[in-house]
Amino acid sequence: MRRKDREITDLKEITEIIQRCDVCRIALHDREYPYILPVNFGFERSGTDLLIYIHGAKEGTKHTLIQQNNKVSFEMDCSHRLIPPAGDECCSASMAYESVIGQGEITLLSGEEKLHGLSVIADHYQIESRQFHPGLMADTAVYCIRSSACTAKRRL
Image (tube, rainbow, N blue to C red; front, top):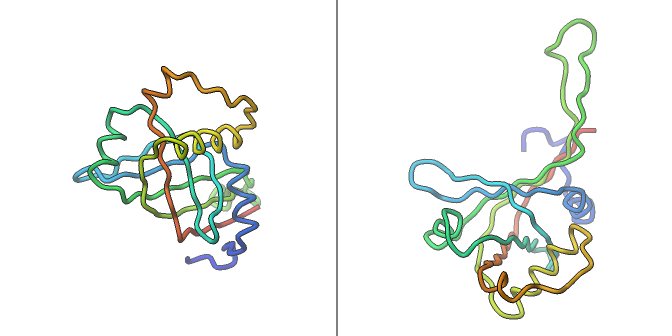
């Protein structure tokens, strides 16, 4: 990381940043160019590993690319605020932010793991209901990204 003065290494602080994020972006392998998309998510820790749960349809580009290659990158950010320029030079303007970036392997969940993943996602968005429509459940894929390494930065 180039800006070590902005690096965050404390797992508790990284977890607090992730809690404030409402969108996670994942990047998948797609031939010549990466395929990146925003997803709703939930997360939990398993020791030092970060587990990120996402959901979506059981068909489509995301599902197909995950089946072809389960290595993914992810990014989430929050706390955005413009830092106005100092004086008349607009080039001194900047942006406040907090971000987490990492890589991991993504797996399709089933059974109780699938229900657990959906519950973790609901928890992240403070949705209390745990009733999942059986018809929708049959058409929904739930994935878990297991990341053992991520980086975090902050500029406030």
